[in-house]
Image 1 (cartoon, helix red, strand yellow):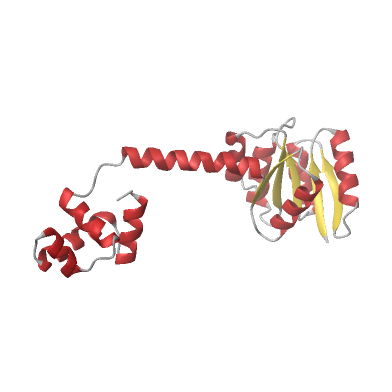
Image 2 (cartoon, helix red, strand yellow):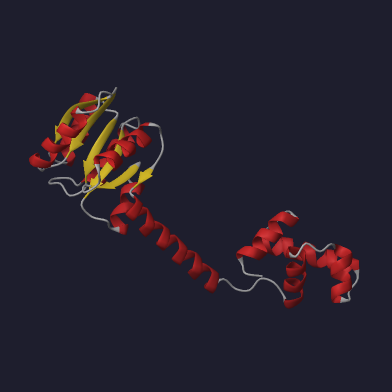
Length: 211
């Protein structure tokens, strides 16, 4: 049986959530908190499995309450329920120890799937929220790629491209009209500069960097 506390200062919303939870034979509504302070107290007294935590609450918001709960009661899992699909709130919630972030407008199916995921020790992020995080991550990758100084010389890039094409030392030496020892030296330098420890790693690096 999964014991759940709802931390939210809107009684109508909580009543609706209680009705939803009552339909699930493996879920028990264990209590309600009207603000972050009460959520911490309830976590201590009732030892729930999960707290469905609103973010905007009086006295202490859900993010700060989650941080204190996770620090003092690490077995209590937090699933954020928010009206806001906001990247800052999502990331701050995760930093505070929440294992999930879903929107209050979500379907009952998504809610119960999120509860099940969190109970199984998995993170669950609403699809639209996850898209925001992925967009940010891809943007950061692009910025890092543009700002990163070129590590390899022109000759090393040529050698790397041929390695990525699957050519061996003899073939590379022939294509570039250099000795096999020189090819080996370039390969060692490339590995040192990129941190790669194998040919497979070099190939992945070449693909990732667009070589």
